[in-house]
Amino acid sequence: MHRQRALDGLRGCAILWVLAYHLVALPAKPAAYSGMAGVMAFASYGWIGVNLFFVLSGYLITQGLFLHERDRAYFGNFWVRRAFRIVPAYALLLVSFVAAKALWPAAQPGADGLFNSVIPFWSYLVFTQNMYMASLGYLGNDWLRVLWSLAVEVQFYLFISVALFLIPRRQAAWWLSSLVVASVLFRYLCYFNLKDPDASLVVLLPSRLDGFLLGGLLAIAPRGNRGGSRLRRPAAAIVFLLLSTAFLGCLFSGRFGGATHYVIPLYYSAMSVGCAALLDLCAAPFRPVQWLMERGPLVEAGRLSYFIYLFHMPIAIVVFHGVLGRAPTLGTASAILVMVAVFAVIYAAAWLSYAYFEAPLIRYSHSLVTRPGGPPAAASAAAAVD
View 1 (tube, rainbow, N blue to C red):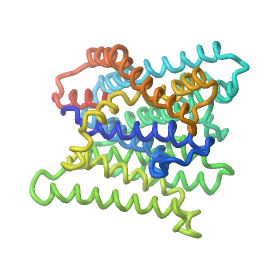
View 2 (view 1 turned 45 degrees about the horizontal axis):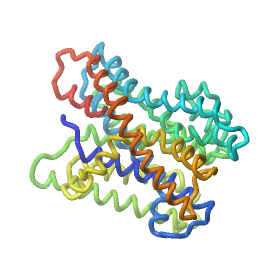
View 3 (view 1 turned 180 degrees about the horizontal axis):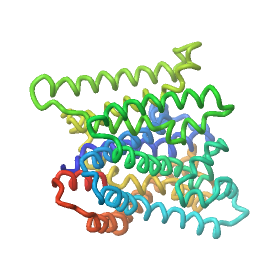
View 4 (view 1 turned 90 degrees about the vertical axis):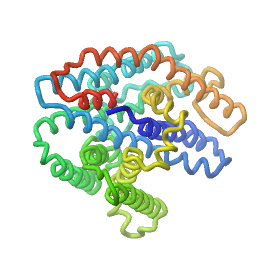
């Protein structure tokens, strides 16, 4: 199974949307920047890009595991690839935090927000920081704030690798569907029983599991190869995408009225259904969507997305404090120019990291994978995940 450019392009859309949220929508608020209203409105929903990452991850990881034989090399192969893909850049970010905290002038405005240790540093080393975030209702300091999603990802890898090892292949769809329902029920329990459920709904794996698993269900669903069956699946995906968009539009505009309180826990599910539908249009493929997602800039952004996601906030913080002496913001011509420079620095750093740091380690991890005479498709699918 070859690597699909359309899926890289979809990943590129996700990371660009996240960047728009963190580096455009959020910095514009304190400055009361009111220009480009349409762009700002779109950017303000950029947090959906993280959910799109979750659905895409569920699709690729489930696909790779589902095609592998459950033999002695099952867990070793999977975790070798995952470790070499995730840990190096993640460790580099943690080292950068320690170094920046030691070197940053204590008198610099906002230093406590950048480097506080409300979330224990050791929790980042074992990917449990999201549990502290849920209990405290706080996503952590600005330098490491985005790492809640890495904890959720790694916890999902552990969960799905064990689950697909134990579940009979013929029952996988039933079990994954049941777990989607369980995830929705967990959110309802949190929402109606916790005093402050917001963080728990965002950062705990059980709260976000349905997004991963909807992607996984797409990965194992049979595809029609001829005639009407090949057309029905894209048509269904378009319908689900429209329904998801309509649901979220009604929720965010308050059109559910008095029922809003009861449908709020469903919005992650609705969002995940829309993300899964868009993913299916890329993977099926549906030619117009595939053509759009295979454009070079989107594919390249997707290829570099992991480093960009980890480092975009630290880079923005360093550049803004170094040039303007303040946190990332918009509202003045100089701030806009600095933000443009931030985007350029992020891209250049991501390209250098992938070319000379991440990609060599990924290739090396492939040489460590045991291939015990299984079908070539399984090995290729695993490589596509990377």
